Length: 272
Image (cartoon, rainbow, N blue to C red):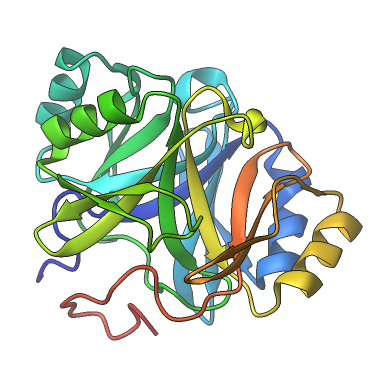
C-alpha cells in the first residue's frame, strides 16, 4: 500500500463529545454527511462520509480520551505511535488515550500538549485518513489557537520535525505561523488575544468548507448551534467560528481555492 500522507500531516479529525446522538443531526444537515457506525470496544464509533468518502469521525467521550468531551481533535500521521507518544510526554505533553489498535483502521492515541490543546497520533493501515479535502463538507485546514505561540511551535517542531514560516497570507489575514513539512503547509498557529476570548486555553480548530457561509450560519442557528467569532474576510475566503449544539468549536469557511495543497496519493478520492 503506498503512503497517502506524510508523517506529520493532519490525516483525520474526530469529534469527541458527551452525546454523539445530539450532535450528529447538526453535522449531517450542515455539512451533508452520511453517518455509519463501526464497533469500538463497547461503544460505536461514527464514521462520517460524503459520497462514500470518509471525512471525519464522532466518538463517545464516555469511552475515549479520559472520559471528557474534548471537542474536535486533529490526528497527525506517524510511523510509530508508541514511540511518538513517549516523545510527546518527554517534551511536556500528557497521553490521555494510550496507543490502541483498531483492526478496521490502524493505531491511534491522543495527547494533550503542554498548553492544553488535545491532538491525536495515527499510524494508518487499512484506513490511512480522510478521503476528501477542500470540498464542501470536508476538512480543509487545521489551526492551533494558543496564548503561547512560540513555545507551542517549538513543541510541535520537536515532535514532528516541522519548519516554521511567518505569513500574513493566512485564514485570519493576521500575523500567522505556518507549520511546514518541506514546502508543504501542514497547519497554522494563531496567537490568542482579546479578540478570541472563547478559545482559551490552547485548542486545535478544525476548518470545514461550505458552499455559502451566510446560508450555513442560518443553518447553524436553526440546528441549535451558535455563531461565535466572525465573519472574517481572509485571503482564502470568508470564515466564521461556530459552536455545535454540544458546545464544540469549529470553523466554517467559504473556501476560495485550497487551504490544504494536494499531494501524491494512490487514492483518487483525496482532494476531489
